Image (tube, rainbow, N blue to C red; front, side, top):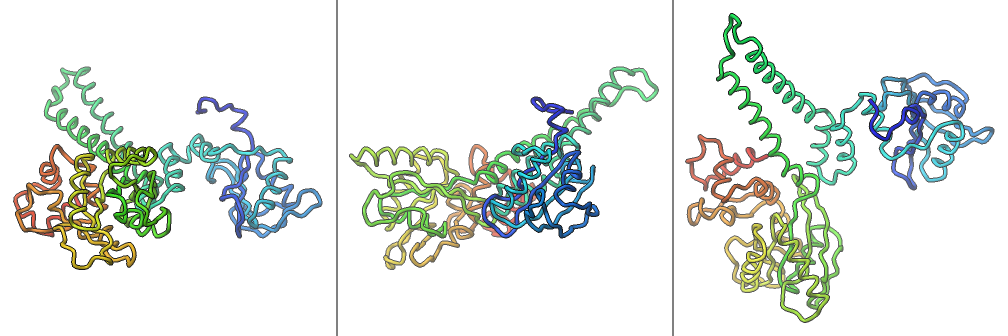
Length: 433
């Protein structure tokens, strides 16, 4: 089957491209694939290496030696594309790879278009479209969870799930068709309960698959975590500290940050898209006002807001202001704790210092009290903790009220136990994940 816009002539072309990242490096990989791949490679190699064994060979363009490389031949159909394929592991750098590619093109190969090797693998039945997408996700992976998810999809996990659904739908269709076409058979009509049960199981499987959509978005894009607060509250310093490098400019001048800065970090479980925003305050400065408007837009789409303040009064005010701008959970973050040691602490607030690094790991991994999220559920005075990344995923599954979705994700036999039991929260996390 040929996709729209793909001619048969193009599919018969022998294509070549740099398969590794361009630029200076120790090794580069050039891939040649198509029906004439072996004959073209033979001219460059001046020999015919044994397939599936890496051979150290000299590469020639006419009488000029181009490089010494490890060359491996993969005969059709047992190659990535399903066509005859040759891979040249050459010395890195732009000149060596471009010289080899130019020599291969002069012998009849064509420069591959972006993604053409993978497209041929799909057309030749080596991959399905979901596995092809997984290759792109794996290349773009910015977190361990995205890497694991892409590998699972590349291994055919999602494809098998869809094939099972397809098989079940065909089975249900066959039951209904049999009942319609042969109602008077000896076995009698198909029991309605059997059809209802089969349809119900398929519906549940479809709903379970659809429900993974929000989590998939978090895995690919990162959950938006907005750092908000007044000017000079230590937001940019916290942003830099969490990122591990100086991305945002930090000065003692109020209003230094005029625009939103984004960066993705791997929290260990889920990617977090941190956003440093302009300080929330009334101002006559037109440029700063535009920056505050950008901050408000980010707040409206945030999964979690880190509401920052350097003292209890400003922190309480930040939480109040942020709650009026966003429906996201506002986590109070007491900043600059290295400068103020005797300041009254707000219950549930997380104390951090960008200067010393204290509290940063707590912010990412633990000590976010669940009672901030589940006030109607947890008995007064009881405290349990859940990590930020799990909290974000839970928010993506929320029901009309926090109380409802928390109960929904607990197994039926656990719905009446004490919510102050840390073990219940751990169980809840496992159900969510």
